[in-house]
Image 1 (cartoon, rainbow, N blue to C red):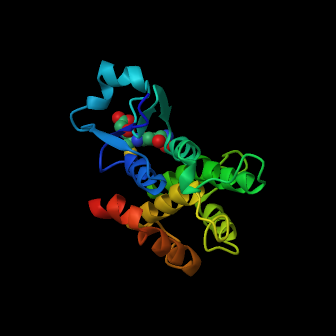
Image 2 (cartoon, helix red, strand yellow):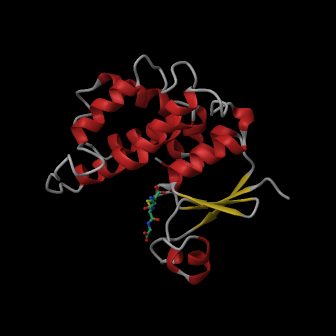
Length: 202
Ligand SMILES: N[C@@H](CCC(=O)N[C@@H](CS)C(=O)NCC(=O)O)C(=O)O
């Protein structure tokens, strides 16, 4: 069976993060362009693959994986030669999973809340707290740094780093006052794999 990963992709979407991950892990892949304006993601053929009609979506060895964070974690496991995930019995795997999931379950919804200027939700009830708490937690995540796992770059950096760079590009509040996060964004965005993918789209 072919090891090639198919990524359903549009350069102006979260599929950029999966593209970046494919380059970091060194997987063979092909991009299938999905025109969101034309609603190609809502056509029956695509909905059979991802019933949410969302990208990124990948297919690898006949298995569909959706959700950017899951895709990134999966690719790190499926292409272990890149060394982007600790072994199953390594406790640092817990740290990596913690921040990968935090990225999708707290960072992303808090970012959407703040960018859409939604009324604050009761942070005791909302699983993602609020934007300020998320930024504070990300600073703690980088202690001691330079990456989530210290000296080891991992799948968590791909998701959280790309999401932070995305937040900065949208002018998300609170980042300019946090030099630690800005320096981390610089480290991510100057990586060759980032430059070949998200950085090349601009
Ligand atoms: N929870 C998904 C979100 C993916 C998502 O919302 N993708 C957008 C593009 S950035 C999309 O496919 N939108 C098309 C639509 O919903 O019609 C993930 O983390 O991958």
